[in-house]
Length: 73
Image (tube, rainbow, N blue to C red):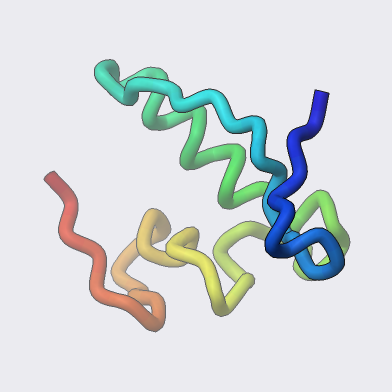
């Protein structure tokens, strides 16, 4: 079931039915980061996740850095 935002029916980008997931384990966080980094690859925008300029994927390969500074905790 998708609930629409009555004030934004024509231009709604995100679904209103989200289900938050607690990132309380490294394995869950890694899984979600892999999913995010693989989206441009699956869409055919790049061959490797590190090549998408608007992603933090490059920060996880060698010494290269992306557009936004990433602080690893």
